[in-house]
Length: 101
Image (cartoon, rainbow, N blue to C red; front, top):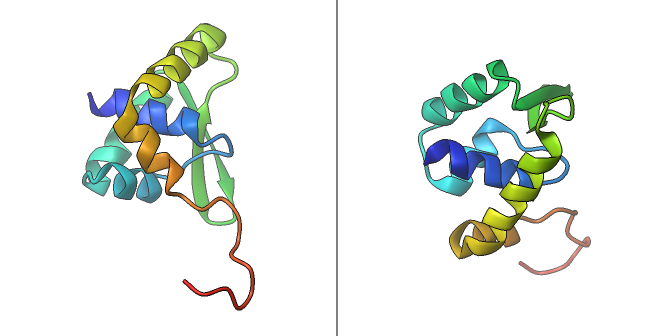
């Protein structure tokens, strides 16, 4: 179940997702999320890259079933109202200077 949620979040965040962000979003322990991300990466489903000091995870484009898996996860994300609602709360761009919270 946790791996399924992690994969939905990774697909929902197109620019990639990092472990602490996923853990906070899903309200799971960071260690649990890191362990599952590592397993998914070892299985070749996820790929990671560094952006400064942050390790971002995304679906591995070289994975044999990448297209089918991405389509399936997008369908699952569309049907999962809870995870989709959590993803919509994330700000993807900076707030305008002086704008009240």
